[in-house]
Image (tube, rainbow, N blue to C red; front, side, top):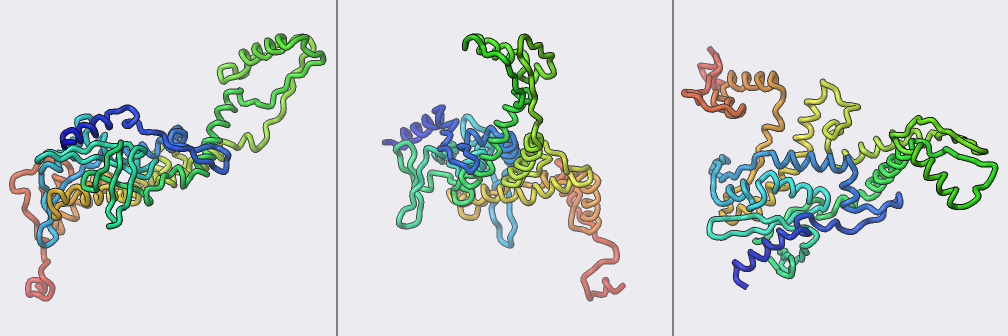
Length: 386
């Protein structure tokens, strides 16, 4: 098979609907009795929100390619790799590509992309993790099988989390509990929140048809949120009795909140970022955002950076590396930033143009000059003793 035909087969596979959406994987039993799968976990609002926050955040962070220079310095470059990272393939821009990457890593524990490199043009074609098999060869290198074809590590971008284990398997217990609470709350409110209503009759129904007719009429008039507090009209010898709601039933929402908090902990996403504002205040919201940048997004970025550097940048040279720019995430309030800029400027290690670059502003003429703080010099020198 020619190289062109091989690449076209990969592209056809990627465009296949099953491959784009991905198989939903096997279901795993949890202690709650629920079968937990990627599909069922994704339908839990907190899981969806947490993964969505991670995916959209990583997709919006600028990714740069640098060349290492002597003395630890670096310079930003542009080549086929940078173009591929900006537009990985014909159907995905960089945001879509890295969003898919995080969704796959967060729920499946692994991400694969086929590396198509012809001359200086490179493309990255996402593959469904459920359709890729990984084998370790005797020399410890990896090979990948996809739709009957075998590829070496130079053709597949492979990123994994926690050894490739899915969060579905490692956290099936908690996710199973969340599924139970979701189903229970839906049933609770669907039945008007009163599952303990009993209708008793002194006389039996004359036929099954009469019983079913009565039940359908009652359900149509008195179940569901829209029929809440509607007036019940009972005829004949029918009597309505209510069973008080237990404390366990009335507290299930609090239990559900606790499970949602656990899910946020799994993904290390602050609860306020997925809509839970119980413990968020104006005084700590900025600090929570900075913690999200440092302790959540930094490891995610580092994982992707190292994979790209190892498996892609080496195609253009070992002195290249990829790096996400997290400055935008770590920016504080405008007052905090300006105070920091003032300190850096007056202390002599920031120029006007460096400050303007951080604020996404154009450089100005003579803006690369550094100030020398007054009465400061080299320790022990005559200038410092004046």
